Image (tube, rainbow, N blue to C red):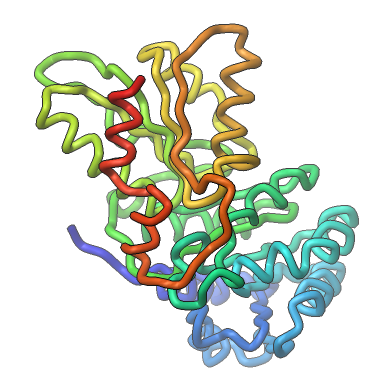
Length: 315
């Protein structure tokens, strides 16, 4: 399957949109090389700001630019975008009802060799409690480009959780995406049998593992559907409940703590529906990060296709 580096797509999209919309600006905390936005700075040097290693200042400057009608994309490692600059993003951007697009890169085990201090397993939990904030995590290069453009057109703050590394292309070019809407990637039909369970997955890593799990289960004659969440907030509760109703069994998958983000959001939707479903969560189980390769870390925290398949079988 063809893949493309996600940070390259992010930067290319901003360069393309920036040619039409002169209000788009990029704000970086000395990480343009890591984020890939050096191409934007080269194309539009008067619209690229490097604030240095000062993440709270990053958000403060982005908020100030927003008050002047600019559309700032402020990027840094997800651990710093959430934990270090949370108060500034909460008050200066969101409470002030501005238009800041905060980008948290290398989420969860994608932080790899940066280690436990740089491994955000809690950023989505923090962001999810901010009123009216839109939270998105694209699953492939096509959805990333479309959701960056949707973020430009959205009036309000956005938290974009961005995997920087290459990701397989899952969607055809030109596929339409909306903030707050999810996509059904697999309907789960195997040998004419309807889906027996549904996986609700967030982000490129976990969507990829979910698809591998469904392939393995299909080889055993089990039919499992896959929903690509794309938008954690607002959550596409209608689609989740539709497939929970069809299958009765649902598994959430996230590169994050089990508590407070996707698993909690899905649990809330299911509980508030007033109906009973079998439900399991794949995610980090109340632990800190460690140092290692992404593949080793995914296995270490049980975020892989075999673990997803075991969870489905257990239901």
